[in-house]
Length: 571
Image 1: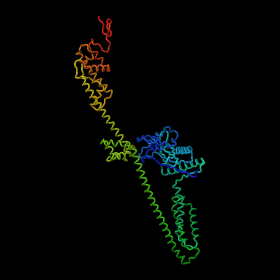
Image 2: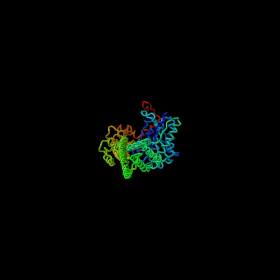
Image 3: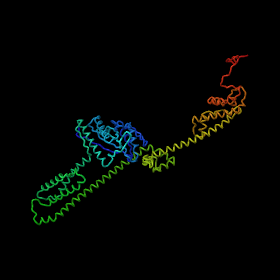
Image 4: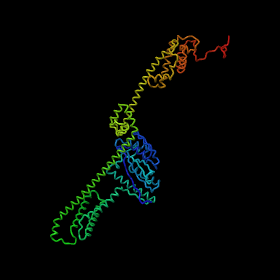
């Protein structure tokens, strides 16, 4: 097996200031479909399901309300009121390829339990397989954690210990150390020679570079000195003693604190002065009184010159470091700007599905267009650009954390509801007017005393009623309104027939024909209408002459007569 393994434990925050949602993050990492109740968006990443080894939620005891992933993260989003709230924290860890699937799952579960126990938070775990197109050793896990403690009543206090500048770095450093220990224990239990180092790569590399730089700088100083002396070994010996003195004082470059830096620089200058003084003096010789006096007079000058040279080298090095820092900072800022632009474009594309209909509505409705532009959204561009304006996803002032697109959606729905209510009020008024006109129209129906202008008769046909109303008012009657209209018309028709009952002709014709002045269609319609409205039948037949039997009742037969199919028999 390999003798080393990759260590990775990275912690990132997910917050609204980044335009991100914990619901979306949870759906993506667990390859699931979640509905964000705050934004109204649905995040569906189920197509990535093949890349998930396992997923589950770990939480403190008595958190029975956490029934599923959607409940957890929508509760998290609802508990945060600020528009720049940090809603989740992601712990991304590498899992050693030297372990089996079961061993990696046990190692991940140990980390989840440690986070729950240590910080009293809920943890959403997703173990990912290596990508089919990537490194097949890239086993890893995403642990999405809440930024508040989880309790029986929901989300509690913020985990400030992970947020504060004084404690956050320390806590994460402790977790990195703990995780490295757990990984190494698991590797050892699996009989693997691989081990991990929890220190960051930058720290390890920096230590190596620092040690090399010290050796190189010492070499450069020695080369810069005037070593024109009879015995150079004495100079090397002096430098070695000075280096050991620095090490013995506890001020080595690898362990020095910031407060020790001035002392370290002073000792370095002293070493340079000692080297310069040795270079100026021939070894194993006598200067004589005049040269000795000269050197005494020049000692302070030479010391000042050595200090000036050291200060110049330090200034040049500091200037180079400052320029390099500026270049790195500019590169980081440019990279950050590119990432921000990419995130903004992705977010705009994501929200375009809900903003495009609002833009289309604004094009048709000037009043709604004024509402849209009042939030700073420019409509003097194409629909595509307007739907992807960055202001759609900003929180609206005076509306809490609600985004502007949601505010305008609510206003559009309110306008639609108001228009629908107004349309319904107008329709009801039209129905009332229509009923009055239809009842007045009944005055032209045939009665015993009035034949009427109709050759055919479909006035009470439901389809005819519906067509008449739709043609006049461009709307529809409800079944109840149509029935009421017909009943009112029949009632008025019966009243008119009763008023003219004295004119009923005494003939052998059917009573229905005589009631409608021999209009066959009207007779059929009257008969059918009274069958459908029996309450109106009795008032009519109560006023008929007694010799007019109810046509629906069987006639009394003469017991002495016999009737066969050929008619009555003779006397």
